Amino acid sequence: MRLSGFFVSVTALLSICLSPVHASDLQREKRMADEIVDAILDGDAVFLKAADDTSEHEFLSIYTEAADEPVRGTAIILHGRGFHPDWQDAINPLRVGLTEYGWNTLSVQMPVLEKQSKYYDYVPLFPQAIPRIEAAIAYAREELAANNIEGKVVLIAHSCGAHMAMAWAYVDSFESIDAYVGIGMC
Image (cartoon, rainbow, N blue to C red):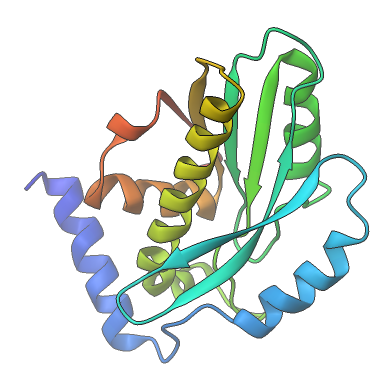
């Protein structure tokens, strides 16, 4: 195991053992989805299903088709800690702006905790992000195939979303996507 992978594993294990919170706040996710869905101006709300070992639940994603042809592919966008898939400061401009350059976008609701939660409170949630990322990749591939588009699937992740993406890559692989862009990973 690489040394950096070892430290990530040890940090995650310690956080899981020491943290009283181990699950996404699904009530908060629902409240955010209820507030966001009616306010979406660009794109459509899509509820994807994430299945883990114990349950299956739906989570909000926002799918926006490319404004220009040819369609280059789909950019899957993961937000930072505690935010949502239409976060006005970072995610909305990215998910809408990319459509003007021939990209479909799929912005995904990542696991969240209560508002006052800190970064290390989120580390035990990283495994819960994995089925969401996998569901988003599958949806992106299906949409491209359904529209006879041979485009790329790119994963773009911001802040804590980038760390969740790296947790996904640690147990899965980057082979199911064509590119990865991590923003604000420090």
